Length: 434
Ligand SMILES: Cc1cc2nc3c(=O)[nH]c(=O)nc-3n(C[C@H](O)[C@H](O)[C@H](O)COP(=O)(O)OP(=O)(O)OC[C@H]3O[C@@H](n4cnc5c(N)ncnc54)[C@H](O)[C@@H]3O)c2cc1C
Image (cartoon, rainbow, N blue to C red; front, side, top):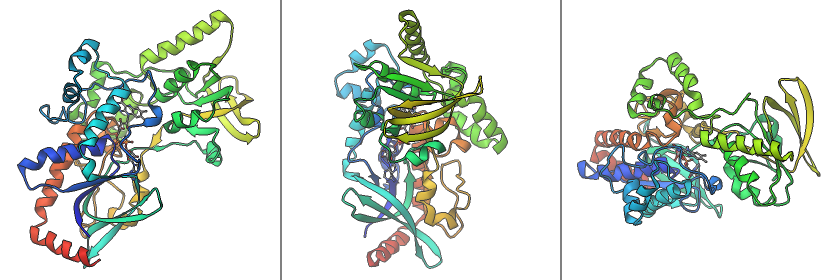
């Protein structure tokens, strides 16, 4: 069995940018051989939120490469050039391409790594592979669509698996009910709800706002309730001084602060990224509510300061018991479908790495996003998108992805150089016997 220098789990923008960073580091040192495993059958970026009107919430200059290497052939500008759209894009006068176009850019870049990505396999487990008293390698176990299990060996790992849908406790028992689904499955699931006359959206962030606009704009639009605990919908603040927290050097500052200060920074700027749609979207929603008051026909409602207290599934629909937090009054409303725009959690890597827990302690990372292991644990395991508490709010976004992957690439080269060729040959020999 071949021993890979690096296996990347997930092939979204984070690990795709890492593939590019590694590719571009090749001329400067010993090449790092890498392969990636992606559970989707082909490259796709948040495909069930690929809404017609959606656009990027970040400048195209924060693409897969530019901030790390503006001369890279994987920049968004080069993509436009190759697609012969550069001049037309300039005439659009925007920093924010449509989400559809950015997805096409990502897919164009990913296609250049087809030979090193195994699509259609979900990694289910990572196991320690011991040599004497040390963990020398990692055994990565994945399952394909036909249920077949695959195993591969790696010296190092990069985990870029994105977030797991956050499902509020009261909705958990309805996990298998097709009428209740998370925003991450929106387009696929809403297509199955064609007869739904009344839909609830839970949440107050960008996804909730986009889904609200999408539903109300559909032919034969359903009645929609947007249910949120907040007093009002706040727009995200992307003004220039605030936006500095997404700068590359802010990661150094954030990482250097004590835990308490980091937590305070995240709290202070939380609304730049969470529960805060674009101002333009907020204005569009307000206009719809205003026009409804003019027409006198109530089709959409904003149920602010409302908390979902309990949920009951019945043949005629999903019944939500809502507490009006202002009036302290409960009411029960029936819906044909409920969309949970309730965000993501970033803890999934812990389950995947469960068998390595004895070596990884509290799952803390160093500045290079590498999990700190016990002295007898030799592989480097890097986390992408799961280090917000230590590296800042930019961690789950695209803001620093290109630079972060350059840093991980450099750390990998260091780890690679520290393992002599003789050691690697011995590992290959052992692996063949496994
Ligand atoms: C709808 C939406 C729009 C967004 N828009 C923006 C934006 O405009 N700007 C911005 O900065 N950020 C945006 N974000 C934030 C988003 O996190 C980043 O854009 C980006 O997707 C992060 O890339 P990633 O590779 O870390 O994670 P993901 O894009 O989530 O990719 C993770 C990949 O890992 C795969 N995977 C997961 N588990 C496994 C497994 N066990 N085995 C194999 N493969 C696995 C998944 O299938 C997926 O392809 C958006 C998020 C959403 C949900």
